[in-house]
Length: 199
Image (tube, rainbow, N blue to C red; front, side, top):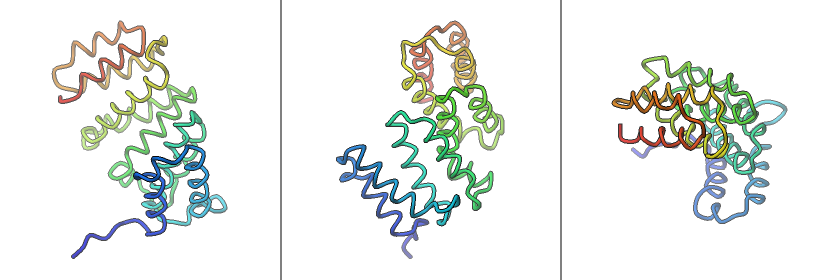
């Protein structure tokens, strides 16, 4: 019996057109315009008119296009709309859409709300049944965050503290985690995060 896709054909087809080989060759402006047309067909009068799986395709594509445009507020707000989808429970978010949960917090930190973003990421890391799944997602997003801010920029001590906490979750990196406390640039945080691969 063939596997049934959780996505509606017309939503998945448009997503494919904008993301796969052909879509990668389109300009950011064209991709954004076509994405916005898709968004307007799926989010009407302040609510999603498609299921959460379809909404995840629309929101993730729009979020990444907004990040590419350095429009962090639009990215964050779109992902908040998605996370408020009536079909989503906390468990469904953490099981199937954890990367979008993390991306929303990342975008919020890029908007300047560092403490609030970190607290949203910290909570699932302290839940043992979610930690393993989330750890690598959070690590990857922190790498994206520090590279977006700029590796030579003077770091926010709140970010350094959180990176030290994340690195400490990985086996054999306690000393690396402790050294993060003396870091002065995002490059040092990036280097520490990269050491977690393969652990």
